[in-house]
Length: 301
Ligand SMILES: NC(=O)c1ccc[n+]([C@@H]2O[C@H](COP(=O)([O-])OP(=O)(O)OC[C@H]3O[C@@H](n4cnc5c(N)ncnc54)[C@H](OP(=O)(O)O)[C@@H]3O)[C@@H](O)[C@H]2O)c1
Image (cartoon, rainbow, N blue to C red; front, top):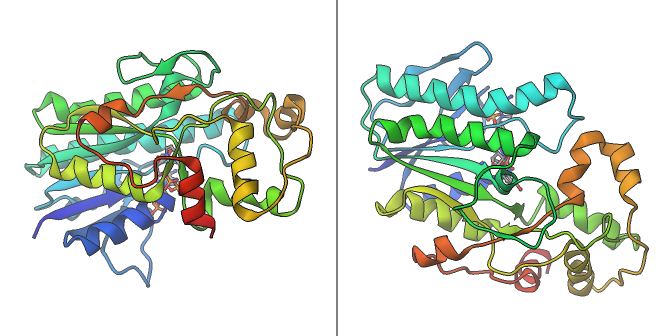
């Protein structure tokens, strides 16, 4: 049986992905900061801060999917939170690499999450594809270091794939639930100018990308994990309204309010450019939910 080790498996994406891998017949192992009495998977633990992990986690593993990382949109970005955001992704990837090396594990591929933040929190006319370089802002720097840490595997000839993920839409919890709530209450509105783009992806399509990254030996390097349709923040909010039968009529939330509420982190809501899905489509991925309307109908009805 093909064995996949997933880090950060208790999170939003990990929960869906592990279930899907299991349904597809993979043997799923999870590596986290603690164990759970109700997890259906074989569990192992690590402590990234102390640079220790249970070596047994990687023994006879075929693939690692690295999703772990301190949540970017929780807590204010003070210096210690920023350090946690970086280290939980970068030091964890290095710890995985050292453990794979020390145990002489022959991985078929190392697949890491990354984020569209790689291209920076900016609103521009550019449609970003995988050939564009990293931004020098905080999130751009996080993603650059995160991908460089994953590339340690590539340097020793293990296939390495990075998924630069957009906002992930799931049926419960996560970013979508936070966007739907004000619309339901009749106070939904665009954020800031509202004309910034919101690259997004339905969780089912994202799981399909991870599955493809496992199964397709031709996949290598970075791929944007975003839906093909480009949509602005305001149009996305209006589409939520249409799908749940609520009118979006409130004026946009001014930028300064978001900056007061979230500090530096407000850029992730206030800025956004279009991101291209062409590379993953060329690799053969067919999106199940290519438009925001279709995705929201599926998730909210
Ligand atoms: N959701 C999105 O819209 C989105 C968009 C772009 C990129 N991503 C990236 O995709 C990855 C998974 O996203 P997600 O939404 O599933 O994230 P999530 O719900 O926040 O879960 C991340 C998991 O990482 C582990 N973790 C948290 N803090 C950690 C720390 N300090 N050290 C080590 N592990 C830690 C936790 O797993 P344990 O408790 O089991 O250890 C947690 O459940 C993240 O790296 C995220 O940045 C997500």
